[in-house]
Length: 147
Picture 1 (cartoon, rainbow, N blue to C red):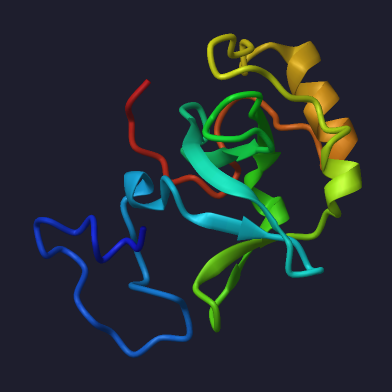
Picture 2: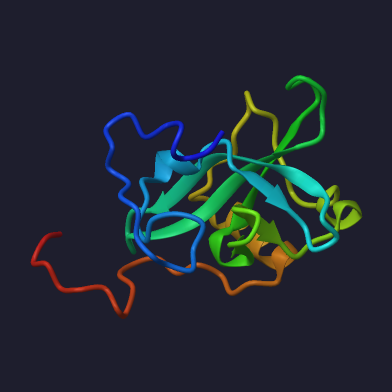
């Protein structure tokens, strides 16, 4: 389902940009968006967008993978920086093949991990080869005076 189909408030105005939609979008409008790999295989869809409340950054996209009609589907968290946008086909891209993705640390839809747990975070970051997320403020975050 396209973000336009979910735009019941008319908040997304047309702008001339290179992206698949407006420059800024609500995180919930990404739910259900397709994710493909570079071999043009559908590797799932976005089920949730996880924010790091200490840094204000998007930490993960939780993707569904496999299963039929939701049965046997595996959820897994992909570090946000691993996703890119396919502006031509209006979808997300993940540079991981299906065989590798099957080995990613995953979880059942009714048994989510503690995503704030350092061991879990390290396992995901190690699998995807990204730098571990640090706690605290992002060095580029504005100073707000709030704690």
